[in-house]
Image (cartoon, rainbow over all chains, first blue to last red; front, side, top):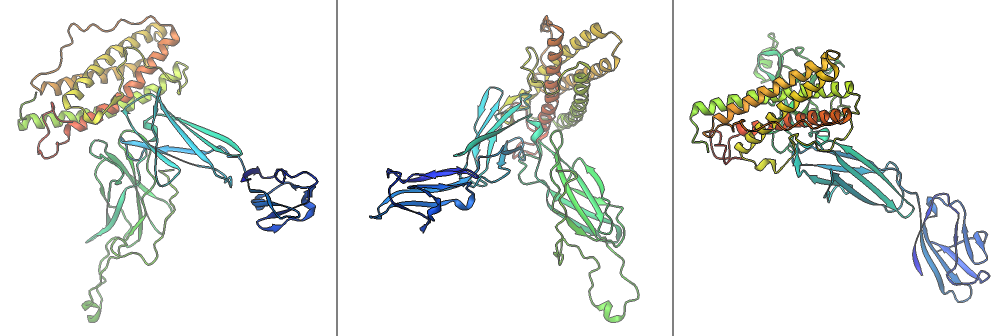
Length: 314
Length: 195
């Protein structure tokens, strides 16, 4: 008979050659390769302190006839550790999603089961096709003071573990970052930059559930960010920029009334408008030199992916 | 039902709604502060789960987005009239229990009570813009104060403040819904039909 046998890393494994007697003459192979006699005790195969490399197909053949008497697929792994579970609403008030992962791999198949209880009511968590380790729940009720309790149980052949989160409806509301952030110089204004962005497309009803925004900006030459909070609108004019210095700008979003700030948006770069130098030669004057170079118009030669270390969104 | 809105009524409503949204926002932050003070002064556990307290209007609602404007206003008004009574009872109990020993909590309770009363009046103003007007309060005697032990009263107070904090969020959302033009119409909808 052939089947899968799961064993823990570090275990000692004994395999019998099917119904063959202890003293029968047999040959054992691992993935088709004969196993050294030193691993045999009579017709039993003894594997000590197995590690991951021991995983594979083990076959036992009767000595003289070479009949296959036993075959198993050995899978060496570990029981699951407590899974990491996170729930979040980035499309409030439609619903929220929960996603999970294991802190360390188990090397063998795991199955996950999630239960979502609101008060006394069990709610359905519809699994997403992708990513696999995620499901989403539709709010049946809004503005509830009753907590949600989400329990994730992970099981594999070697063990079982679970984790539970309890939270209020409002606590997990965290929008996605603002999108389409654009920064432009303001002609004839050497200290201004015009920044605009859009609500995250995942936020379903910005009219009834308006977002407020947090803008941070700094010249590349400095480390210190400047911040400004904006309670409505999706644009802002920076009026205190250092003339001629390239700036890096990011935006974050938060529901006006509840929840936490999003992560920072992708960073954009811009340099305020600068005066044309007067002493240009004739040839230079003919060339139409664009004084301002703004990443939003031309992708910078190298796009600096800024540290997304969120002051806001972590 | 509301007749087609005269421009002045629409403007008046929009003004009342936006002021109401700001009042609800302020009320919420004050209630959250009051909740923290209340939990601390009453020696409660902030994460204590409070089963639905009888007589306290529950903010939780299903199919919120399908409610008409009038439903929103009426449910809000019923809730804030109830909170007005509940907070007055809490204030009375607080004075009996602690006298002047803890004026901080008492003042905070009184301030929120004032805001709740102001918000209820605001809702009545909005309903007056409808031909029907707000329901009268006569003949609706406040619920009798239940005889509870000290700890149950504290838990009840926690339940009241938690629901009020949620109502403040809901009210802001409700009022924003009222200012939303329904699809295809330029002016704000007549509330009877519009979600």
